[in-house]
Image (tube, rainbow, N blue to C red; front, side, top):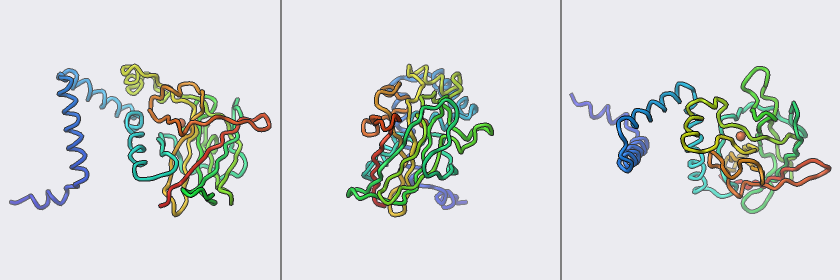
Length: 257
Ligand SMILES: [Fe+2]
C-alpha cells in the first residue's frame, strides 16, 4: 500500500521548514555545549513542569514574544510593535473621559495622538488601554477584580487624539508564582523577575495595520533590566505635568494596510 499520498496531504511546508530548522538550531546548541543526558532530561522535565503549572504561555512570552514583534517591524513602518502579554481582554468598557480605578492610585492622564505615515491625524481609531493596579495586578482574573477596572476602550477624535484619566501603573513580577518553574528559570538565568511600569495599548482602524504596543516611563524602576527584553528607547516617555497631574503623552503612527 502506498501511503505517500495521504502522508503528503498532511504536510504543511511552513511548519516542516520551521520545525526542522528549530531542531537543527537546538541541536547546534547541544553540540556547542556538549549537553549531557542529565542536562537534557532536566531541561525537558522543566518544560513539562512549566506546562503543568500552566506557565508555558508566560515562558514563551518571556523568552521569545518580542522577537516576533521585531520581525513584524521588518515589514511595516510606524510605531514599534511590542509584547501584548497575557493580560489583554477584548471586552473592556468604552469610556470618554476616565477609566474606572480603585485603591490607593496615583492619577495619570493618558493621552495620545494617532497619525498616519504622512503625519495626518487618524480619527475614529479603536483603542484599548490596560495597565497594572497599585498592587501590580491586572483586572479580570477574579470575581472581586472585574475587568472594568484599570482597562478601557477609547476612540480617537477628529484630531486623532484621545485623553482619559487613569492611574500610574506600577512594576509587577512576571510571575506571581515566584517559586514556579518560570520564576525558577529567571533565578537560574541570573535575571530579575520584575517588569517595569508599562501602559499597554492596541490600535485598530480599517485601512491600517493593527498595532499592539506599550509605553514605558523614563527613570522607572527595572527599566534597564526588563526580563521580557521589550523595552526600547522609542517607547520610553518622559511624563509631563498639567494641573498637578502627571501626563503620559503618547505618539502613535499607524502604517497603511
Ligand atoms: Fe504589563
